[in-house]
Length: 517
Image (cartoon, rainbow, N blue to C red; front, side, top):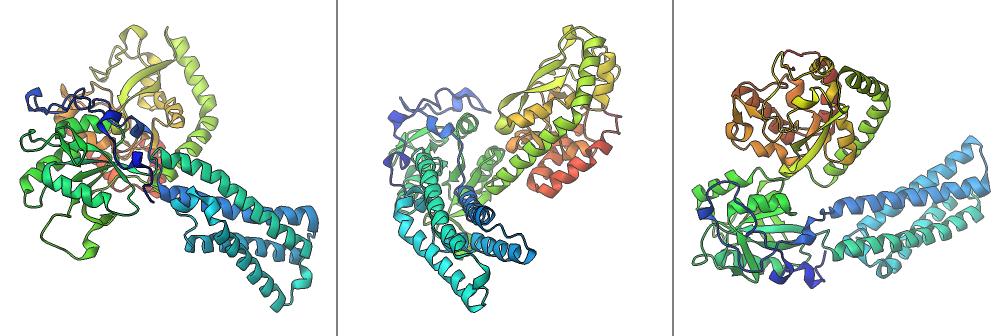
């Protein structure tokens, strides 16, 4: 995709809001912070989510296939109305063949690239050529197989004209959306460079010289002072140090981290990666200025610039779409099926003790963002603990009679299906923890190094740790450590089949209530 809009090539300091000045380091003391240059601001437009070009291309391709097939079948139903099995098979095979062949030829001709979708009028001659050739081949096939008398010429002509008009109209509508997204930089990955100086300047120059660049640089983060790492490199501002980058990435959209440190700085690289691997972003190590060269297959490329892949997002492109569809469909069906049970639980909670039926609690969600999750209230109203500073233990006097039952069976979590529909939770994923949750009187973040890596995906209603018995009270450090281990295993090995397996065995896992109070 060509970066023809200069706003998408560089974010000037005047277009930014002060991020590094307002961000507090995630770890370390304030003395180690690098002051942000005056008037340096983060890219506010980058809060809008990135749209994967491959997903857009795939959706457009499927829609066009359905449109071509649907118009053919609709015209058959409206005009031909021949319901004999033989004739139905003839017309159905023709429409399905065209619905598959024409998008395939368009794909081969590059008509689904973002550049082509942005300017649909420029692609009309190519699309018409493919359309005419496809129908010409179809007509030739009908003629040589001597089945021409079985097809309606009026149907074929109408399908040819109406189908082409519909596809061109559809392309015009899609083009309007794609142009707006492109102007907003929604197809560009927002990148941050870690490490400034001459290496960063050379890398930026190489990136900007590359054709079809789909990356927009937000700024630079470097632990070194201004004497060794200038406040601006190739026109991009230094926004802070590596600790501040953690807060920046959690408050602003960052899709890609590019590290410019040399391969020889092994200890420093390990220190930086130890801090950054918990973020849900792609992490790449620049190989542009390295003297040692490997075979081309050893690299990934952004434009023409080689990189080493260090970490990838757990879910990206179609994986994100598939999991979203899975969450929406299954959670909606679950709410429909479980609504009578939820109504009875709500009635029991209301009759058992005074107070609201639902309890809302702040918990950590995707990328360490705070979300408000719903639960059936299981404690007396005046004894509830919104921050979970004291975890519930066996025989806890704060828990109501109904609360003991719904907590043991995890029925108190059912309202979180609404969180799934809102997009805050997923059906399967690491369970969201309260902000002050502790293991043996120590915060989870103090017990488990890299704890926040479990937030690289959305938290879930159930998870791999829960179905393996690691749920309920965390009265020892081992319990939270094992829980996090299972969460990270799930993140690294995600698949739809894995999700469905966890959902299938969750009811059986809930029968083991020895750790749930």
